[in-house]
Image 1 (cartoon, rainbow, N blue to C red):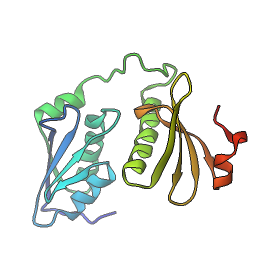
Image 2: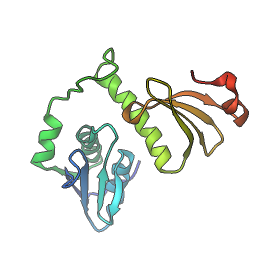
Image 3: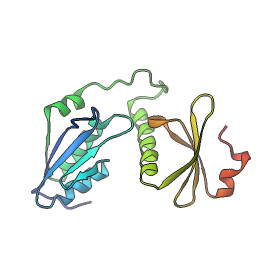
Image 4: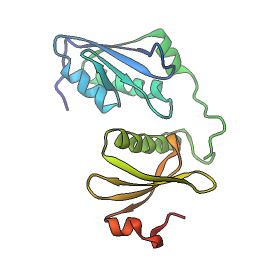
Length: 179
């Protein structure tokens, strides 16, 4: 874990142009610890002293609060603007969620898995080769840099890895179709 940077100060706010995104502004001569902790919590650099958190499930206020708690635990001063605090305090309701048997934490687990897949695609760790619609949702096949193949099921914040394959012959075999 990074060493606390007692001179660091982090201001968390709603993004001015993207309604669910959160910005973090760092003030310190060397905000290394704050930047590292924010990165662990999904924030990405947007400038020398700024980061942003954007998620496919639009749950940025929840995860910004978790980041603020981690920063404070590390001894870093955190200010949350009133607008962001209001979003954090707003009762969360995901109307029409297609998995009604899941509770709030389980829904967030599904979204976190989908976010990881999204981040892997964006970072180039996972290459998607083909998408198709199976009559209900999108399915896809891709390959991680380490050679593992995956069949994906679902879209956006509901995308999940349906099957993992250890080699290219398994991935391309019709016997291993996700249907």
